[in-house]
Length: 244
Image (cartoon, rainbow, N blue to C red; front, side):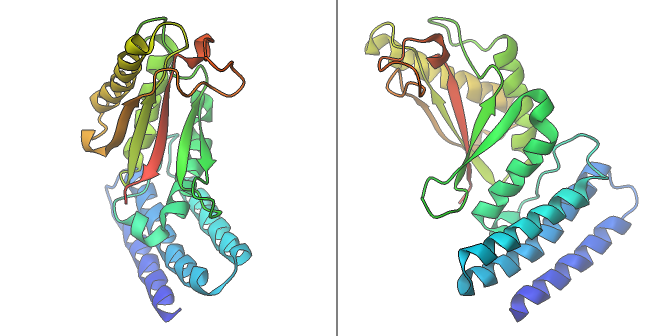
């Protein structure tokens, strides 16, 4: 616990130094605040995680998220705050992703983008974030070109992705159930690639793509028929995972 307290003190000192720097833009200051306060609480969270039960760990997480949310309010200017490189190790993957989801909720809801927390490991922690968008990233029949709301959604998403450099992306392209697998497989792959290319064009590092895959019509959306013939299945899904 002494180590955690020491790191918290260092974080507080760093926060003071960042706040006193003249000439820094509002967004970098906010990023410094989020990382400094988050890293200190992350160290405490790691200590508690080794010794306490899940309920107390959740309490620590909530404290960290509360500080992150409150500290950034005066600095965001409506922008994604983000966390600088190095925060993932201090916060842990679950808390890092939770902070990203919190930031997205505060800043991106008006643009129709939300993040769904996914506990893919069944350990009670957030392991990945599924991007949810109004209008989704959808395509015309037999096409892989981003147009209209799909293009706008991808452009909006790039802002959030750039603010969280210690994450990687899994991009999955899908088709509806019309046509043959020989046609749908490359089509779904092209759809995934079109989203990757659009994100890279907006400043997302190409090395941050952990997976870019086409699934044809093998993963229809829940509520659609087994063959996935509904138009909503002509889509691309983006998942955000920690860069570990």
